Length: 237
Image (cartoon, rainbow, N blue to C red; front, side, top):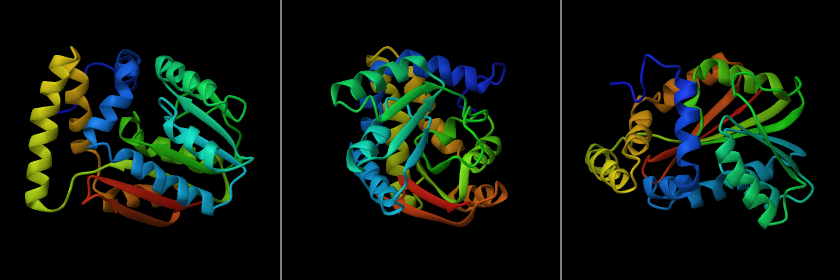
């Protein structure tokens, strides 16, 4: 079963859902990952920092956690964060202002498949927990390749399905039974059902890296995080 209504445009459904859950999104992500998403983001920041970028594009920036973490840890870097959801961006702007990073983190409404960013203009593109929400995954990856400079890098953090059969079963029970129950308490059960279902639908690491290569990336790698709950994918244009 699809994690969204096939009679309505997926991107529109995703935008509406994230507009609706924006105030609770950080809590939702932390719950889905057992709070370990904070550690994974730190891993992403370390990877990006080694690349010594000057201009970073954070696609599907959401509430801005990764964009702000990169700006905080990399002096002089400029981060552009784009997202479909205005309510998510409002949360990100609030956090950017609170930590004094609103001049170095620019947040704009934008579609990952039609980025209003010039060709070959950014050093690194990051995406944290966003690629599985793209309406057209291949188109989104091609757009990322378009805006990257030659030799530029993409770093993608995304949930995945654990490979270990026992752990996969335990995690599946947690994500498909417990999370929707939590969602029922929060009066947004549908969002809590969508997130784990969208993880199930997302391609396995080998298939996703094949899509990355088809979009124009080379040296594609996947780093498994926390027994396969997530992956950090990297590739070079």
